[in-house]
Image 1 (cartoon, rainbow, N blue to C red):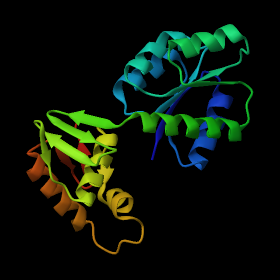
Image 2 (spheres, rainbow, N blue to C red; image 1 turned 90 degrees about the vertical axis):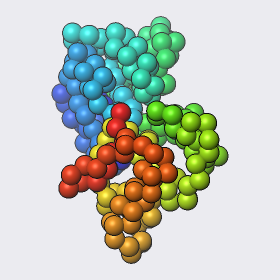
Image 3 (spheres, helix red, strand yellow; image 1 turned 180 degrees about the horizontal axis):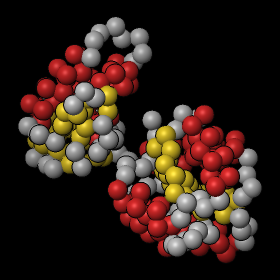
Image 4 (cartoon, one colour; image 1 turned 135 degrees about the horizontal axis):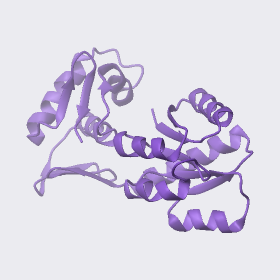
Length: 216
């Protein structure tokens, strides 16, 4: 599930956005000012930011560089329809903008488009001396290729794409083996053990009574 941070000081707008995001299957975090939003950006795993321009404490332009630095896609929310404001945000690195008031269907379409574009741009994930090449379905450790089965690769990819986030055994089983798989969550445990052994890594942590997490 994609996690979206909504940084918007007007509570009715923020709550309406949150409701529509939840109905569309997104997990949401909320911030009512730029300072609170910046803390989430620094401390949480976020897939996309909806960022209001006019915010108390720190405005959208002030926290935008921190979002860009972490390679998090961002859509600007603004009540201003002036060309100068839109150009400034885009030149600073924003992926898109939408002018308030807007229809929920338009916002969701823009979110999907930005997430789709950002996903295509990511072709490699690395941690420690391990490189995961998503398009080629290849994994290297210390410059040497590691032979993984398709399920092992998909499991590693999923953990890497959600680095720092605990993933339940049930969710991993659902996403890697699909809904109709009739096996038990023990299947996940066995594949995790093999991944740890093949990659010689202790970064894949067991989360007690939950599942697994690839440590930041």
